Amino acid sequence: MELRVLNYFLTVVREKTISKAAEALHLSQPTLSKQLKELEEELGVTLFTRGNRTITLTEEGIYLANKGKEILSLVDSTTANLMSEEVISGEISIGGGETQAFEFVAILLHELREKYSDIKLKLYSGNADDVLDKIDQGLLDFGLVIDPVEKQKYEYLRLPLADHWGVLINNSHPLAEKKTIAPEDIVDIPLLISSQSSVDNQLAEWFGENIEHLTIVGTYNLLYNASLLVKQNVASALCIDGIIPTANTNLVFVPFAPPLTANINIIWKKNQIFSNASKAFLQLLSKKE
Image (cartoon, rainbow, N blue to C red; front, top):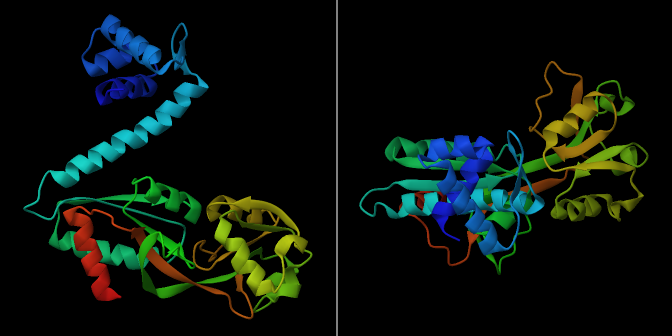
């Protein structure tokens, strides 16, 4: 499959009609239709169905559209990173979950771009499982994750900060009056917890037992939408402090007691070949460690 034809397909997906896509690509409509038909024959699948006005993607078409965007993004960033060995330029791609620790990274990136204004940034927000998957695929250079780190698989530097766990609660809830939350306080209340795989182990360690006895009514991968459920008093959310602003809202964050903290690491693949931009970021990060 040629990248040129993949770009044709993604243009049709974006424009939603072959005629508009052909116009955007400066191709004739028959030429574009022929290229797409040959792509389907090469892959042995039907990528979309043609309606009177717009196209509709098949399951295979949706899959190719999602993967195709990642492929072209990787090609674009690789090309940008290879274009210049003389100057510090290119793209730095960093992924992470919701954490105030990202502000530390933001300060470093500001300092770096003050010195090297040609550097471009690509940020990705997702939970640790998502971030690790994209690092493994080569779609991210760096990721922010909490302990533990797979030391056989990744290089890492520990950041000089930590996240603090607690409960995000509706201010009408009886627990909202407490200064701290103990394990026994939340055994019988409806809870939302993070869906990332490492969180269960941290919470189980804090509770001193398996968390299956808790009343878990749902999971979340990023906290904002879960906080809307907390606002409606559907449930309370076990989460990290500082992600959701609580001032002038009906939300309250109450920390755990005993405290539960998580160290933050920035990681990258072992034997990673970095662009000049990513090398400069890593050097700066090492100085701040």
